[in-house]
Image 1: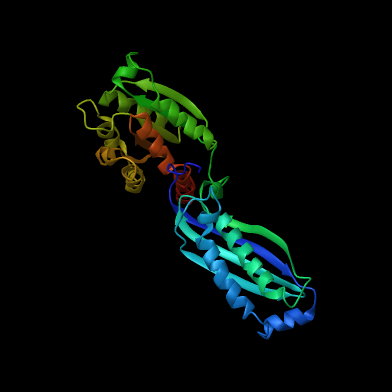
Image 2: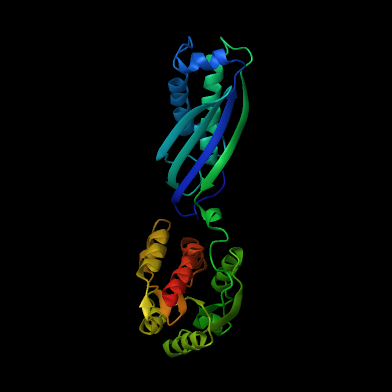
Length: 303
């Protein structure tokens, strides 16, 4: 199965369609008048479809078991076609496209089974996905990516050359994956005055997104939050709340991160952990969704 542990849970919706084609109006009349010998076609097939949606991971090997929060199965008749639509909702890390299509296919198969004694020409003509929403793919091309971005590594050992940087490079790679180019990448020591000077210089230079990685822990030299917090003109507490919540679900030590985030004038500054794993998890928790802040901020400035 595909690893989805790095994903966040979001509302995901999928709608699938299946079409059952019958050979005569007499079959349609039997369905509508509830005269099919095996029973009420719509109600029986709806029940079968509901079960199929919930059992998808039992029969499709690579599908993840997930919570089904809502399912609607709708039928309509157009000429000699019975059109089935299955809508499925979940709040989870992966989508429900296969669940919706599995539900539609079993609904159609149930109708086929119920009608074949009275119509030898019945057939299933189409099963397809109509729509899906949610997840990172649902946010593609919705955010600004023409931003001036800087990644600054705060580390005494890396700046002294006794250790190679991995966290900063991982952050740059994550940014690149969502279409953000890093214009500036620098390494500085864990010195409060140097961190503040660098942050203010980047703000003055017009950078719109600045990511500091390192110095958010509890060692005596971890001073990044102390350096950045006084400079923030508008804090956004929810950013680091989301990051810590994401991290806590994967590593109990995430509660110890002291990262801060907010605007310094028109520059969004976010402080990330110095560990490669912590930095990557924070990026997974925040991006690309955090980029919506630039649209909101731009609207506020226009007002």
